[in-house]
Length: 203
Image 1 (spheres, one colour):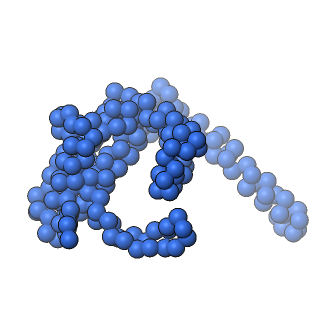
Image 2: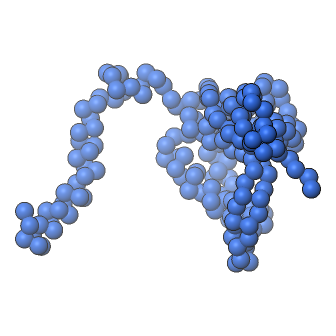
Image 3: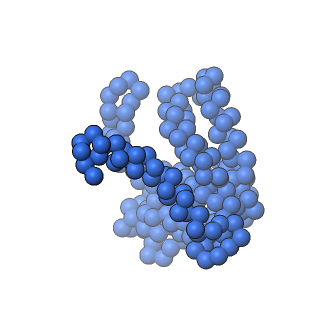
């Protein structure tokens, strides 16, 4: 039987650090070395497999209705997924990220069921591609005994700024604004409590 990865217990005691570069959501280089998709995935499979990454024991729902259990090896896919999520975390607007994540399950379902060339897949693919326009930059990862840990992210399109993400005074956000925000968000619960009080004679 061909095995792509070693067990985490047998992985090296020294961690391996790699950097994955993305252009519009597509991984294009590892450690500043440009690679074709096939070569890049092969590199990731070897690097991840050598460090015990990517073994998955899962029960899945088959299209025909039954459940099946399988043990898969996805070292390259595991690393690239973690890196891609990390890159999106600093380059996607919050609501765009939420929308894209909500579409991901349907996207995966269509691919799994063989509907890659369906009209609905074409619409979905174009929408997801639109979200990836600024998902470009580099993610640094630590590979160690079955773990793939993000240790850094950088992008020219990053929406993160340490100057704004602070509890101190800054030019874009006044902490006192949260008072009104909390009051409005809690309004429906306050109304319910008032109406419940009238209905059940509570104060």
